[in-house]
Length: 199
Image 1 (cartoon, rainbow, N blue to C red):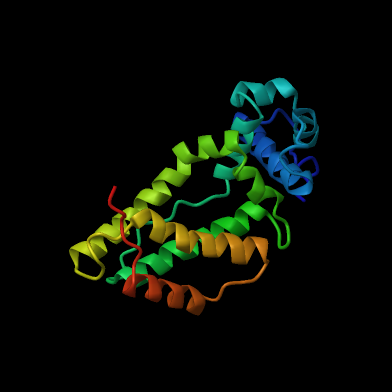
Image 2: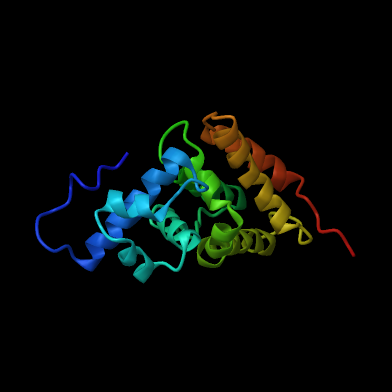
């Protein structure tokens, strides 16, 4: 747990410092008790500020939790290893790191579950998940252009399969996924990709 109050400097804090403390307090409280039990009064108390400081920055609880998530999630660079399988592997490893960051600590899944709350996810889709998906589609389009994968590959299904591996195995089952396992799954998907279904 982040002890925000103990690390607070003496004197009037800057806006950036207050924001940092609010986000850190939110992350630690969500990790402890989940999204449903998160109260802005508790965030304010732990951050050492008033509720008005929170409402000046965030419209509601979902907005606050989305901002807290964005403070730890990394979009990552568009990989360019020279191969489709290599690029998909690097893309998947960013997902793995992000799920660890969202969980806050080993064995904790409250933080990760919070980002899938409908109101939070809607905000994160616009700010983060859409960009991650677009990166994945760009990787697959580049692979199609190089002739590494079929032109009628369904990019959403392929990307969701890789992301699902991370979500279920790493988060639900609490099993660390070695790089070699990602590579094996990605190699199988590239060799026999899911295809778009005609309407």
